[in-house]
Length: 335
Ligand code: AHN
Ligand code: ZN
Image (cartoon, rainbow, N blue to C red; front, top):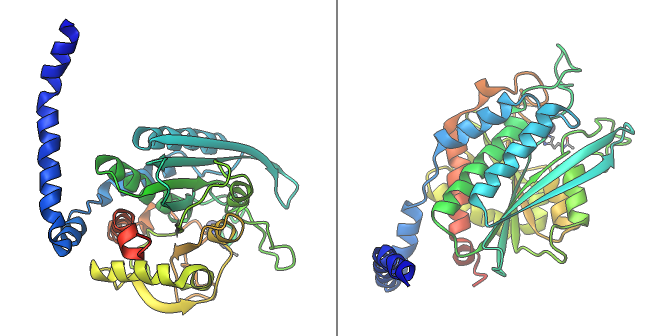
């Protein structure tokens, strides 16, 4: 009895503060524009925080499968999602790559508002390619994978932290896919050798009959002056949603990053998420018009380290994806 009274007194100020915020929301509801505008302006994404999460991954060492760096980083990523998400699923699996090596894979899934029917999937790969084979020096050693692997995960960790501070109305699932980057460069055997983690997840979703309305994949989203083009497969999967995301970026002043140019489609995690798991997913991936491959000059070389990571790029991508997360139903008219 005494305890109940004590709790009541303790909780009274919170009850009042909840009422206050409800009233504020009701007032804003009277004017739809002001609600959209206030949500827009109140999107907080801390690029220092995102940068520190990229640095932390790099500090583990290259996250090459079957190494201690990979194992330690995977455990750290799980613990970070456990701080900010309502439910975390860890999907451990074994799979053989095209070199007949048995790899220990770990996909990490954090769900926010797990019971919400209408969901948005945000994803990035967290593994590092075992060898920097586009480099002329030490091509058999891995790079730090700061941008390729580290940047997408760093942005999504900061998004998870923000979504915990201010909850979205939609359900959000954040997935860190493993074993994306160990594929073959040989054109005759390339098919299916990349993206082993997302292939495994798409064939064995963490919840039976898992559904999300859309997905966004982040891949190499941290380099200085990066540009993000309309990637061909994304256009095929959901060009309307791609337009909404690019428009959101432009309206926040990030049109220099999110350019309106269509580039050739590539095999990346979004292909398996879209085709096998049936979640239409777009790929925000750096496009460099100056290279043959379209990837940055640092790609799969030892230049992929912290020196190429720029907080302004992390901010452009992070703020855009967070804004889309908060306003997903309104922007897409799925309402
Ligand atoms: C291909 O090279 C076919 N896909 C590359 C996807 C990737 C690798 N993203 C990062 N590293
Ligand atoms: Zn790669």
